[in-house]
Length: 76
Image (cartoon, rainbow, N blue to C red):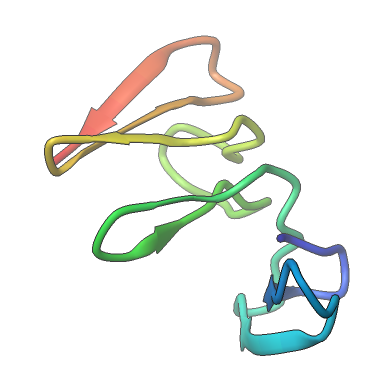
């Protein structure tokens, strides 16, 4: 799960204990993650599309997300 403390956390569903955490370069994670071979989240980053505040969707190696620019984006 994302957090406004600029970290991403994996929590064990059975115990509720933290399994791992990863810093997000000072950016707030404000979306739900998606994963396949890697964990993908939206974050309050300065990108060419603006911040990514929507939850991403990973399908067949392509990441789909909505940008604050009002567009749907896809990155392979």
